Structures are given as C-alpha cells and as structure tokens.
Amino acid sequence: MTYPRDLWEDTALENTAYPFQLFQNRCLAARAGHCILYLHWHEHFELLVMKRGSAVFHIDSRPYAAAEGDVLIIPGGSLHVGYSLAEGDVHYDCIVVNASLFNDWLHDPIHIQYVAPYLEGRLRFPVKISCFEEGHPAHLAHLEEIIRELSSKPPAYQLTVKSRLHLFLTLLARENNPSMLEAEAHNAYFPNRERFKQLIRHIESNFSDKMTIEQAARQVSLNPYYFCKLFKRLTGRTFVEYVNICRVKEARRLLTETNESVTEIASRVGLDNPNYFTKLYKKYMGTTPTRERKS
Image (cartoon, rainbow, N blue to C red; front, side, top):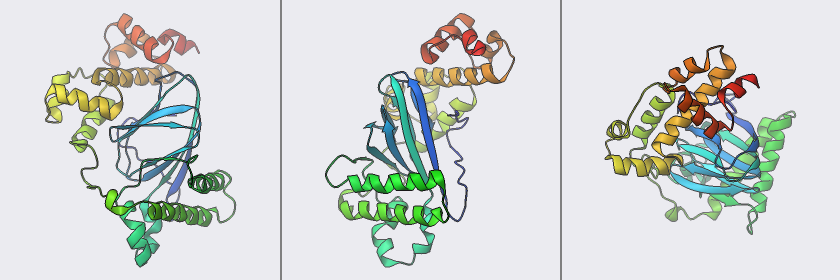
C-alpha cells in the first residue's frame, strides 16, 4: 500500500461510464496498532469487506471494530483511517463507487425515494454490517460476487457489478428506517471537519514543520484541550503520534527511493536529532533506518 501525500485521495476510477474500482489490501504480518489504512477522504462512497484478521477503522472520528465477515459502509466525504487490532495478516477488500454510476436512474421515482437519499448524503446507512447476523449473509454474497466480477473482469462485468451494487443498496434502504437515519450532509458527525482536513493535509505535506499543539489548535479554532480530544477521536492517535507517524512513513519512502544519508533524511522530515529519529523509526516500523535501507 502506498502512503498518500495529501489527505484528499484522488482515487482513480477506470471508467467514467462505470465509476467503480476494487482495491484488495493485503497487510502481511501486521503488528497490533499498525496503520493499515492511512487517513484520507474522497468524494466516492466505499464498501469495505473484511477477509482476514481484525482491525479498527475510525470513520469521521467514530471507531468500528471489524473482523472477518464484517462490512463497513463509508459515506462519500468521510475521513477514515484503520489500524490492526492484533498481530498477524490483515486482508480486506474495498469497492469504491461514485454515485454518478446511477445517474440513469435519476428519473425513476422509486430510486429517488429509496436509494438516492443515501447516495446524496441526505441519509446514511449504518456504517457496520455483520454478515453473520440473521438476514445479512445475502448482503455479503452480493459483495463477494461483485468482488469476483471486478477481479476476473469477464465480458460485460460492468453490467453485473452495477446491477449487484444497486440491488445491495436497495436491500439496505428497505431494511433501514429513514426517520432514524437522517443526517446533516454538511456536518456529518464531526465538528470543524473541513478545517481538520486542511490541517492534516498540511501535516502530511510539510514534514519538516515543527507545529505545536497550540498552533494546530488555532488552525481549527479550538482550545488545545478540546483539539487534542477531537484529534484523537478522528485519527485514533494523539497529535504528536500522528505527526511522528507521518514523518516516519515519509522517511521510509526516502530510505527506499533515494541515496540520501540517514542524517539527511532525518533532517528532511523534521527530526534533527539522528538518535531520536532512529528511536522513533524503530518504534513505529519495528526496525532501524539502517536495516530498512539494507533490506
């Protein structure tokens, strides 16, 4: 998996007429607490299917534990990040879909009544669906068929995927009471979300900046105490931890893609003390920078 340089992910969808894509994520020998999905957002909605292992995904600051057979529905525009819950392999598949896939249904009154409100963000499905619960195995079967079609791409797979996706969404809409799921599309669970997006994009693009908690809090117009609480809810990490993780991940990229010295790389990511840099690198990556380069 590659590390996004910006918080906003410009997720490439292969075909504008059929805007969906399958991403199969395989994190081998993940350590407990290891980041398996970096914090980002995109305008598409996402269906995440857990295949192996266990993880916790923070979606607009709310944590959702997921194990094999669980499905997470991530609304478009939501900030999301994931961490392994235990040592071992973590496998999950993501079906990313743009709502424009169903534009040819916009004049269908039944679609407008049941499915369109969710695609437009006026209503929200439950984020987590456990497909081992009564009535839900059929949902997983639809998603598994979509994954098979997107993996093998037989002739006219686009039509099968589109049909299955619409059926999946229709079944969910049938099951959920709209009066209980009303959401404010622009506030979506998290205060100051847009300002947090800008802040974290800055962190992930300016590794050498030495921003204090007080400075970060001012950027989102919060006092430092409340800022720290919200940041931890959003990312699953403290502000300092998140900054250090960003720096270490950038350092890993530089170690593998450049010939710069360890000291030069430490300075580039804002860690001028090489000994402290090595300590942080080992903490988050499980090895030293020197060993990383040799491997």
